[in-house]
Length: 182
Image 1 (cartoon, rainbow, N blue to C red):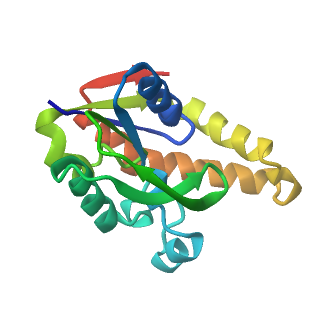
Image 2: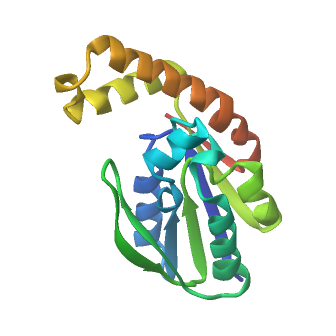
């Protein structure tokens, strides 16, 4: 029987790390990273969406079609290879396997998880909001954004980011079968 695992949580919480670790420890496992479905900044701006916690930031129609192919039709799929902080870079093939891990901010949102919730597990990596703010500011500083933006701009962005997490992502914790506190 196929094992499906959906991993969600804030950006920078360790979703990709956990998914890759589980893949390395479990034979016959594929990982589908949902960042591959993230729309471009230009597309998100046209929709009035500026962070990746809102499902409008993602091509959810293609995501649902690919999940259906991968899980129900047992076919391999090709998705854009997403490089953290750098956008997409070519294509990667995600193979149909006995174990499939779906990782990304929106993976436990009702519109993505609902069709699979009765026969899969959901893991939510929970970060306290104060820590999340620090993770975001730290990541922006590490990426050299202080050279382009003022600390006030970075702080505003971090506040917006935390608000988006609380509004969109955190409520999906209800779909988790396991919560990892960080």
